[in-house]
Length: 549
Ligand code: GLC
Image 1: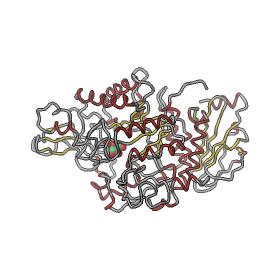
Image 2: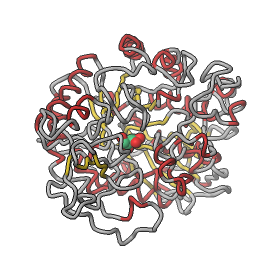
Image 3: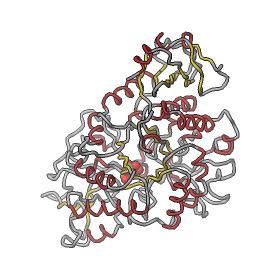
């Protein structure tokens, strides 16, 4: 088709957690030169954009999400020269680079906060959210931190509390102060001038809080497990005024060529869609769509979620899908190894931009860690629920080969998190040599997505498959049409597809080997945990009409 699509609509985004990708200098922590040495691997995945989690100077209480300088590189990751070189190499291979922007909070070591906490009367005294103790002493209100405990820490010098929804070393900026927001726009300009293609904006929905600092109401649906969930966070997140700020960020991006932002928003459809903004006042190019991460892994449930999301998208809004990131248990752990390929096929064949988390393409799983190995404040602050919420298990080093440190770091180096025990078989080298590996499957599918517009930009519609085990849908563009049929069950199944699809199709790809090239749609059988991609002959006008959304 002749429609023009932007790179962030057509391409796959691949997230790198820099600490865990490749160590080049023997300190056990991944770095930019390490990523540079793996750029050809990125090319081989047929992904079009790389998102780097934070690489800025940081005391690393939250592993870079506590930023001490927005416009520099942490020496553990390298130098600005390394960054520039990486950007050049990524661009030279036709890929794009998205950097993480953390506007909600800084590190308590950021010079802005150091100045702000000095006294109540300095140029930056109002750059953070400071409150007096409650009249009788104690916390200003009942707000809680995502990482456990109250959202307030007392500062002796100012005799006041500062607010933080994450670690106490992550004080929240006061974006109601126009100077603060202008400083953030300046940070964006700094990176845009360096040539980055976009931003992944951390907790974008939390940027503003209730100016009256009212208590949050209890959550009647609380399950008693995670303290943070005991309240309904109506005063600390998703305030309507936040959209005004996001529109200004978007206007800045629109003043440059082909740049984008993807916002981190964990909200249900109705609220999520507002983060696209409207035609006159656009906001995020993509507000992350995380719903498949929390949906029970069952065909009917997944279909319902996909269809509801598609139906809720405002006109012109571009969909996107995520199955993993550095805050969520690994995909292959959540759905099981047998279903990991089905999940990958789903992620890469739904309509919209997929984001893939490093290592999911080789089937990395959560690594269970003993308490002495925990690094994540979420686990350390809440040991009793660390097994549920701790994020170290999904951040372990990338597995490149079968050597002692899996090729992530030189032999003898102690990686910052342990390498998984399965690295002798689950690694890039072994899987590249095996045409039946999940990595080979991933590459085949991403290569196909590149050449098949029906998959990258085509229309979507789900179809009834006559069984609860199968989620089936069509992707079509112009005269081309593909059927995707995914068996979520661990047993063979016989979907019953609508007759108007025709009787035969041509197999394009299956999650398993040995399928014959012609697929009988009228007597289709799917093996346990099998997903297939089938090209349909779109013969007559009647069928075409049914296929068009
Ligand atoms: C986001 C990040 C997470 C971090 C938090 C605070 O949710 O993805 O890793 O801990 O923000 O910055």
